[in-house]
Length: 371
Ligand SMILES: CC(=O)SCCNC(=O)CCNC(=O)[C@H](O)C(C)(C)COP(=O)(O)OP(=O)(O)OC[C@H]1O[C@@H](n2cnc3c(N)ncnc32)[C@H](O)[C@@H]1OP(=O)(O)O
Ligand SMILES: O=C([O-])CC(=O)C(=O)O
Image 1 (cartoon, protein in one colour):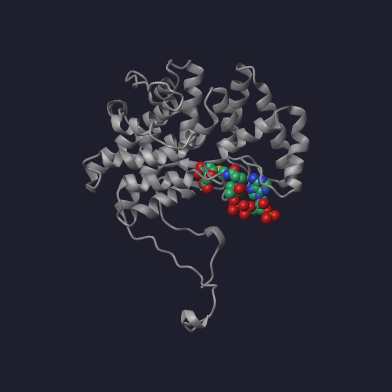
Image 2 (cartoon, helix red, strand yellow):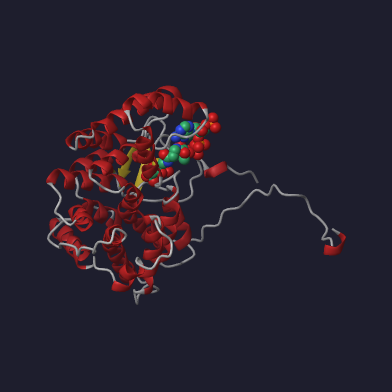
């Protein structure tokens, strides 16, 4: 038996949800460029869960179901006020809150198709409320109830900030949600599938996936990109900072990808938004710094930016706290996790690979007084 480090190149399942072929990303056969330019996030959620685009009335029904299920139990919100540690990371709070939500769902263990679909709606709806409520409660602010007249993207920004977003903000946030919704067998999606392939419940699968997304080699990179931009501070410091990092063989967050070679097709959309939004906010330097970093890293390491690189300056210019960037990734990606969880249940087999053993040969047990 020989192993492949990080399972590189291993095809671990079949899936009809999304594909990456020759650096082109599609959801159910629809090019990500087409979806980013035209679709609402709710349309994409429907597409991922039903493997077809919704008709008007189907989309209206999903929107209504999401709006109707956004409230979360008081106990979950109250629990945010009980942490003994200051500055709990919002991804840790989110991971716990999703698990906690499962304890308030009487049907959490019901594995019927109907109940799993209802759980999907509840999770997709409530995650927006959980993230925004935590963001407010930690600042001593009251959570804001969803405005059911708003779409999902606008509602998220409304619940976060307490005011309805401008249309340019809503459009940008909707596009970011569309771009992050699914991505074949990335680490967090694989985690979700491994978890539910034991026939564990959907709350467990999503909780596990949040844990995997949190790491800086995966979803956690978007927050690290912004930390890097803040640390560099000024445009004339970029060159020295990046060259030092590369010389020390340190990774530049937001660059590289296990699957894409020529480039991540999502990055250009976020780049475009970053340019527009940072300029509008009078913070164009973050776009210009990002551009400089891209020039150096693509030139010297031949590593193109991934989805996390320009999303950082986009979210920053929407006025979002930097440690909420990864939870926002989860708010979108939960749609993909759920699609994969449902697909896994449909055609399940336990996921259990092997390990190539590299430890010592057979040893004889030595009693403790003779070691
Ligand atoms: C949503 C997402 O998850 S997108 C990815 C988000 N993560 C990041 O942006 C973190 C930075 N990037 C990385 O760490 C990696 O490129 C990953 C994790 C995305 C992909 O990892 P892998 O396919 O395992 O590549 P691996 O880490 O083995 O890198 C291969 C080589 O490229 C180098 N490399 C890869 N990414 C970077 C980077 N961002 N900066 C500098 N060098 C890099 C590695 O140091 C390694 O060099 P070596 O062969 O000389 O040792
Ligand atoms: O696919 C991956 O490995 C990481 C990624 O880009 C994503 O999850 O969006």
